[in-house]
Every structure is written in structure tokens, then in C-alpha cells.
Amino acid sequence: MRVVIAEDLALLRDGLTRLLEAYEFEVVAAVDDAEKLIEALRTYEPDIAVVDVRMPPTFTDEGLRAAIEARAERPGLPVLVLSQYVEQLYARELLSSGDGAVGYLLKDRVADVVTFVEAVRTVAAGGTVLDPEVVATLMARAQPDSPISRLTDREREVLELMAQGRSNTAIAAALFVTEKAISKHTSNIFMKLDLPPDDDDNRRVLAVVAYLQG
Image (cartoon, rainbow, N blue to C red; front, side, top):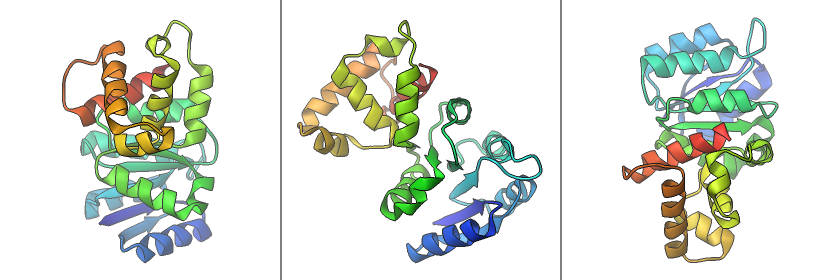
């Protein structure tokens, strides 16, 4: 699997490269600014980009903007964004297309190697992954009149785990229930969020987008 990394801190950039290569990813480029990121994505057409939100010159949201621009040029390009802080707007903008194949993790999560590598693989395969802290923050900010308010407590738990990129099997294991029960909950979630019958993977992405919109 071919990966482009965009991270301005040399030590972290090198660490990400070594970590992913240890798990048999092919890092085709590791760059330190948004302009080089766009160039690398056009040149190498990787399977996924791992991108820091804040990059030179202003260290605000250059990485995110470059990722969104790249996805506009190549719809569905898998992008996993790394951020130092929980920024609801960043997560929302990244998912706004509803195409999936995106992730938003806090940088601290890289230290949990298994979780990080699994997130890269999930996003590269077209899934959506949100950091648990991002999910918790979004849940706390949910508006009482939002579509999310229609969900039961259990359905909200299921959607939280769905937003973290968990499969129905993994959600069932986490909640100590059967996979059949989770399938029923997800169907109820889709119905209550007014998501018409469609490919289930696409509806999962749209459900997470609704979740982000609170």
C-alpha cells in the first residue's frame, strides 16, 4: 500500500515513515509543507495520504486545505488527518463531501501503534475513522433539536463506535451484544437520520456526517 506523509516536524515525519514501513506500507514520499504534499499526491497517486493539519507557513490549517483540494481533484482519495487538538470544524470539513475514506486522529494516538495502523488501513479501504476524543467532544456539543436527538442511548453508543471506524462485529464485541442486534440498531439509526436505502458503507459515512453536524 503506497503512502504519502505530510508532517513538518522532522522527528515525527521520520517516525511515521519507519512505523508504517515496519508494517509493510510503502512510503513513496514524506514532505514538510502543503505545497509539496499536493505535488507528491499528483506525482505518486498514493493509496492514502497521512497529513498534519497545521503546516508551514502559518501553521493553521494548510494541511487540511491541501487534503481537501487533493480530494476535489481526485474524489475519494483516502486521507487520514492528524491534529494536536480536537477541532470540530476540521473534522466536519473533511467529511463534508460524504464520500468516506477519511480519518481524523489526534497525534497522541500514533503512540498506540496498533490503533494507528488499523486506522490507516481502514481509511485506505474506504472507511471513516474519528478519534474517540473527537467523538466525545462532538457528542457533548450535539444540539437538542438535531437529528441525533432522535436516537436512543444505545443507538448513540453504536453511532459513536461507528464514527470511530468500528465494524458491526467490533461494535457487537465492544457492547457485549450480538452482531444481529447491532445490525438492527444500525438500521434504526439510518431510518431516524432519514438516510434512504443505499450501499451500507455509504450510509455509514452519511450517518457520521450527520453526527458531526450535531
